[in-house]
Image (cartoon, rainbow, N blue to C red; front, side, top):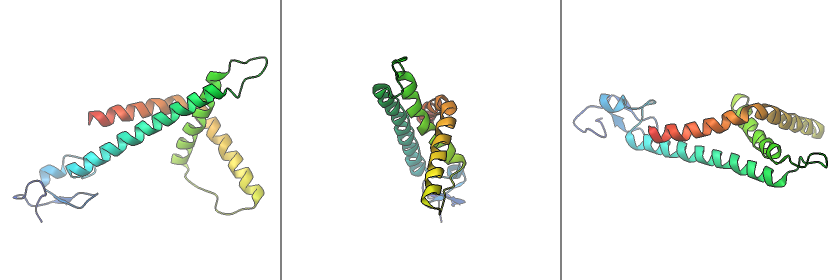
Length: 148
């Protein structure tokens, strides 16, 4: 098999996505070993995923800001906190599910209820601390994907 980009060169590796043969020069361009078209596809998907993630965090913040469900008679101006709370739940979900993707497989109705209440509380608590970093990470991923 010869290199897809350089037909006169023998292939020493294959693209991990599509299986095209790549010569030494082409195989050393990207990690993991990818052809140019598969690398561009991965880059587009990374940009799209990062933009959607950032947009979703912003939409959650705006919804929370407009709903203002944390306000009381004593402190009616909790829009920022309400928006941050909704954003934090999603940020906590993304963080916890990346670290512990385990799911409960069987249980009674009470166990399922307790499990999901625990997970929601965990998402909220973790997300409260992680949300600013999640926003910055999403922006960083977009910038990094454009620079590559």
